[in-house]
Structures are given as structure tokens and as C-alpha cells.
Length: 374
Image 1 (cartoon, one colour):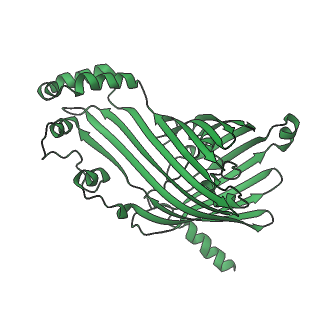
Image 2 (cartoon, rainbow, N blue to C red; image 1 turned 90 degrees about the horizontal axis):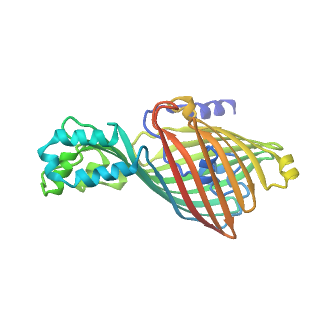
Image 3 (cartoon, rainbow, N blue to C red; image 1 turned 60 degrees about the vertical axis):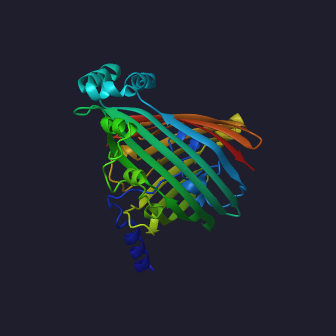
């Protein structure tokens, strides 16, 4: 038995730094608002996506995210819009006087490297009963920014889309220990590319020989040239999750992509650990439905700064409203929800660190969602 355990732990911690990428995750608005830190409590029926052990005792029948839209931008989006309307539409000015266009761009924005707009939308539905959950979700994200080129400004485009379906099962392994398992089928095309403004102009003017995307192995190039094959980005993964219960305390551990097949892409295993404390005495004293504190370290073996992995937050909720605050990747998060009958409206503000460590390049995102549950 000892030898089997040694082999098991050697396997799950081996090849954790393949320098590939980690699989996409579904993030609920409530958890993002409290620092994306909860992998042990969860009462909003998205727990199956964070830790399959949370399926233990699940009695939710149906849950659907009707709409979940997020947006983020830095500096002034109005300045960017004015620049587009006054310059990009004047092709002759672009092609005849590149020095003017560079100077105009610099004067208007004040910077050369700047993110203007980041848009995304989510949709999710799940059915849960008797500890078994079946869920499907998807999202599309697009980020566009400009920087100064040698002759013309360069458009930087970063796109991601993910679609996932999974079946999860949670059960009580011991009196104080729950275990869960998830089988996920997911699709994850993503790309990052540079586009010359001159190529955009030539393309619009009808030059069929112009190619916007030069990287022949990239998703954008494949889409532009009709060679995109969804099978190249299709994966099948197995996840495990555990939760240890004490009176007011829960401790959780999740192994994602323990087994990964179908695609030849390098997908790193990831490990999340979490802690949660419920203030039951305060709940009783103030007659409040729920007061919890949560803390987690995500992607424990990931090859980036520890500060980007630490998440912490709190939730205080009365029926039918709740408020959340937290810290994720070094930045504050906050949000709220309002529930009436089977409809819940949620809002979250959070940030992602796009640099190597917190404080380098914050991308603040605001998301709004409407959910229906039965």
C-alpha cells in the first residue's frame, strides 16, 4: 500500500512544469468578487467547476446563466474611438503620410503601448442531483491594443474561446472527508498576433494577396485561410478533488488535468489548495444567513510568481442579497448579488495581472450576469 501511494504521488506531481498551458476554467461572478478564493464552501451551484468534491450532497436540479458579459479597458475608450473615426477611415492619409499618422496617434493617446478594449461573454448551464452534476459552458474573449510601429501603428490582437462539458460526481469518502471526480471534454483555441495597419488598409481596398496574420501555425491565420480544424484543439481531462471537514473549517485540494488525452498539446497539471472558515457564532448573533472567509493558492506548481497565485476573500449574505470582497493576484475585488425567486442578478469587479508579478500590468474587468435556477 505504501508503495502504491508513493507511485501515485510521484505521478500526480510529475511533469507539472511542461511549459505548456493550463486548461480553461469557468469562473463564477460571486467567487471572482471574493478574490476567486473559494474551493471549499460554495452555495451557488458552480462548485462543480472549482472542486468536484463539492458535489457531495448536491440537490440542485437546473441552473442556467442567461447572460454573463464582461468588459475591460485602460485609459480612455473615447479617445480611441475618436482616433479611429478621424484617422483609420481616411486611407489616403494613412498611405501617403505615415509620419503624420504616427504623430497623430502619439498625440491622441499619449502612449505607444496601450490596451484599449477587452470584451468577453460567458454562457453556462448545469443539472445536478444526488451528487452527480452535468454542466456545459463556453466563453469568448477578445482583446485589442495598439502600439507604435516602424512606419505604421501595429494592432495587437489576443483571442481566446473555450467550450467545455463535464460530468462530476462527489461522495463522502470518510466521515470528515469528501472526494469528487470530474471528466471534462473541452475545446480551447487561443492565439496572439500582430497586424500591420497597412495590411488592414490593403485588405479593405481589395488586395487579395495581402495576409493579415503571418504565423501559419496560429489560429488567426488558420481562420483567415480556411485551414482551421477544431480537432486540433480538443481535449479530454480527468480531475480529482477533496474536502476535509471540521466544525467551522474546511480544507480543500484539487488536481486538474491529472489525466489528459486526445490532443498532443502540452497541458500542465495544476494543483489548487484552499481553506475556508465559517463564522457560525456571528451568523447566529446578527441573524445573517452566511459569513465566510476563504483563502486559496491556485496552480501551486505553476511557473510564475507566488503573488499571482494567492487569493483571499469574504462573503456576507442575507436572503436575498449578498456582498463579497477580496484580493486576487494582488488586486482588490468586490461584487454583490440579488436573488428573487429563481432569478439572480450578479456583478463582479476584479483584475488580472498580465505581467510576471502583481503590480506590473493590471487589467481590470467588470462582469454582469443574470442567472436562472430551479
